[in-house]
Length: 426
Image 1 (tube, rainbow, N blue to C red):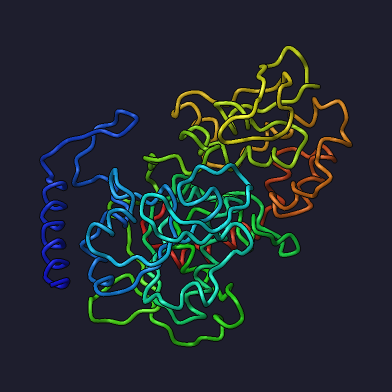
Image 2 (image 1 turned 120 degrees about the vertical axis):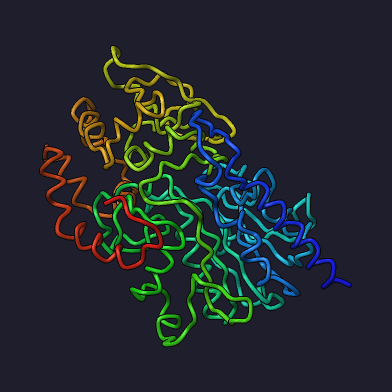
């Protein structure tokens, strides 16, 4: 009876998907741009007819958060309605429902809506234990990334991937577009600054989707010693229902690295819109300085400032809010810059690369140079090197700093090409 129900639901779903992709129907995204549904970017999670057969009669564990959507529905809710047996949910930073501020540790709990146990992978542990997945037949990973080395979801994915392979659990990765995937730039991480905000020798903006990055982790043997010792595992992007797999990638449709994908859901509390997302690769570096990066305002990573900067600059006052309960300079008037604007204006400011001019200008204007960088060493962890801080202290120009990123940046670009699943931007 369960098999008949499952098959019937899948057939109905295929019919609905086919109807929703009618090439004659026009719609628009949040920027007002018209597109034909035949060309609309479709995240892998919405291609249910492709991966549903691999979940049939299986006990499933899902690593997901609030960005794991299928249209207007959550992936977990969607799969439950289709009869998929979900045994456990794993949640990253910000929690499964995405409402926990940055950096706050999370305990395990039961999800109120589904009643399913949520095991936190941003609390006492970073990866599932063998006990967490002992009753699971197949694992799923589906989270929206923003394409920067210090955004912790790629570190969470690495831990999850290692756990799956070490415990011989098939892993299905549902890919999503990278909103910053149209360029590669920044200093390549020095291994001595390896941390959860940077685990591998990649630049700040690495220009890959989650699936492409996972392929790189495996191909370059950047995983655990136990996983790197595996010489034969089946990794595929061309699934067939009767083929066993270790890692299966479900690709997006109609996405390329030239795409400017507009996220339907904010990926975390302090990335509320595309302007913040586009500026984030450049302005997140201010987290390692004495300046406010706009947390506690409605324009995080767009407002940059400090109470001691010149009073004739743009002013704002950060205060506790849902995304930031505590941060720098709450309740104080800060002076600095509003880097926001329309999406088009922000894209022009970013200009397809990591912008250092704001950081350099802020340092020049800051009255107490020896207090500009936080003593916690967080700036070096974010930048992935101790060279950038010294270069700014020494008054190096942006062009001089950029030259120092070579040849490692070009070498990374060459390696990256081997693992792409989509047409590149160059």
